[in-house]
Length: 122
Image (cartoon, rainbow, N blue to C red; front, top):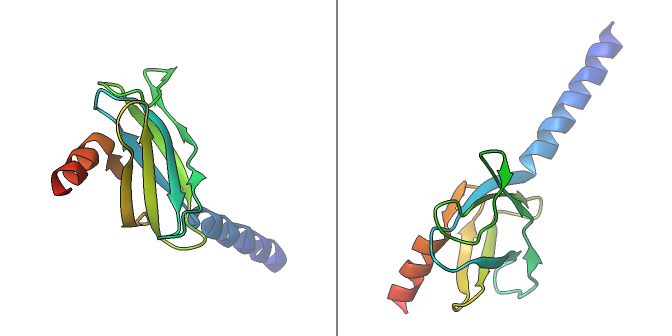
């Protein structure tokens, strides 16, 4: 009986470790320009890796085309740390670069608001 509990404990802890190596982020795009890709890279490395996003609203697939339903969820691998640069590429406007973002603490990114804040600082 003790071995069964030990196996159960190992499986449970390995599941927790696996779950702890990913973070779910909700990407929201309420702007008028669609998002083409969202990518992550270690700070200043330039080695961009696209984030896979998926969205569900009312039972249907939702893209990040912008507007009222521009919401998608992304699962981000955080096994190599929490601080990344985020690059959001749009279909018509200049790309958004967010530097040194702690994605372990991030659960939501309002893309349009971040774009306007970055534009007002430049």
